[in-house]
Length: 178
Image 1: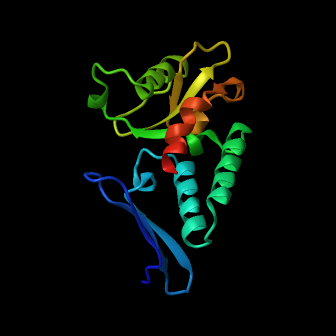
Image 2 (image 1 turned 90 degrees about the vertical axis):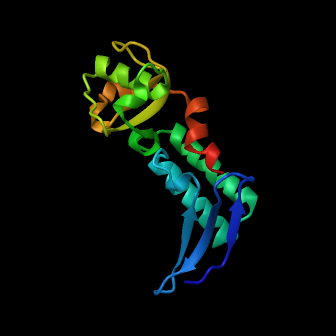
Image 3 (image 1 turned 180 degrees about the vertical axis):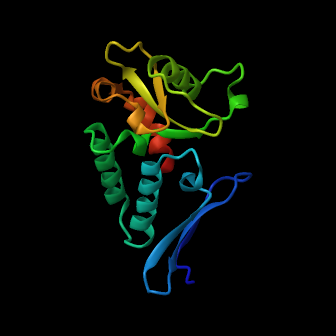
């Protein structure tokens, strides 16, 4: 292994976070990431891809801040344009029954809504995937978030008519990664 660049970020008392480049046996460069959102289970698949690509741009391709910002802006534009499936940008969280006793949070509200409106049954250890919403088409009642385990559980009419609240969806999805 050959380490080309190592960047440690974070404040005192915060677990070390760093990314570095490794040259594998085939001569290809790979980015290794430790401690960032990339390794967390509650980071969306798209969020992980975006963060890894950003580190690749910086550490391997030596891209400037402007180019990284343009890449992020393009991903956001594509998200708003419906290029990515819901499962790629929904915020995942493991469902543990005890986590939701006497607590209110967007994942719980969305889960309750999905159970009532879509007849979805969630089991302990299910991965709840959440999307913040501004509006939901009729005949469904309003909820500020919806939750699903598999995208196929969402009816096409709901997916097409739903207005996603990007002001709430972007920060945990992408803004906190950069």
